Image 1 (cartoon, rainbow over the protein chains, first blue to last red):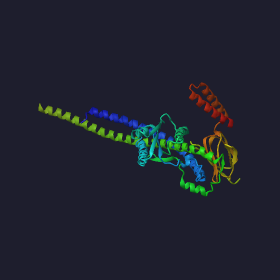
Image 2: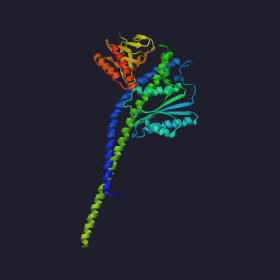
Image 3: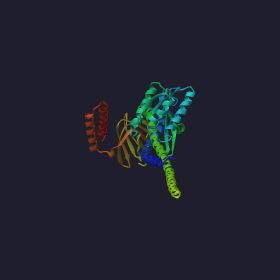
Length: 295
Length: 131
């Protein structure tokens, strides 16, 4: 049975924790709104980009000189997993969910006898994956210094990926991030970056529309050569923004739960505190009365 | 002109404009070209310059840097790496910013900071030339 003083200490400690989680929830809510706006604002660009790419590739398929970024290296041996997570914890299962998806993916690939390389964006995922696949890690990109994700950040990551691709270090690249559904639903997603993922259904439609008859300025291959790397930057940018929104959403939910749990705990502890206080008073009274009776 | 051209201007950060317009002048990498309704499908890269949009007789100007223009049967889509509404900036502000950037470049202590300031200055001057 804890003493009254112990109980008082625990109550005040839980109260302090509740204040912190409540504050974190508020901060996450404010940041979420901004992150969500940014993610939604970036969607049209990524969508248009995909449409343009689908149009272009429709005219290019079947040609020999189609760039490697689009059709791949023809092999499927070395896979690069770009795993984007948060730099900070205390956001529920957000980081774990992304890492879990990447882990399953990596296990499956190694099971098939393929080589897996992992490039981490964000500290939390790197910490977990380093333990699981120490020999597969090829690098970590730390984003903790960036307050607001700009297109430049995505560009840097894309450049690094492209450098590795040009050096022939991998055949297929996949990006792992969490798609923002709502505050309570963040879906870990795997998206293939290289070779470029082209929506099949869209492709068929565009061909019907007679999109093959483009005039190109400059040459078609030159445009593709600039468009494809750009597309990778855009996809990464979109992934990072979705991730940022998801992170804040997950943190908000996690902190909301924590605040509620702390409240429940305070209620329970207060009840226990009052009970033992009353028990002690009763005990003292009994002692005084029986002492007086004994005289 | 009864027919309209569907026009979208998007940058990675946001959608700047989407409207039915009369005509758009695009700074293509191999020369400026105008796009009206029913233009032949064209795909072009952009060079830094001014995008002129004519909508119901009024003209809107945007500064764009890098990116692509795509014209197809549905309309014109500009995917700009950077886009700036020139209606929202004025020359005096820009001059002030250029002065600041010049000072930054002069004050820069490290090479990296100097390069960054120089880059910013070059970009600002491009915009200034366009206004």
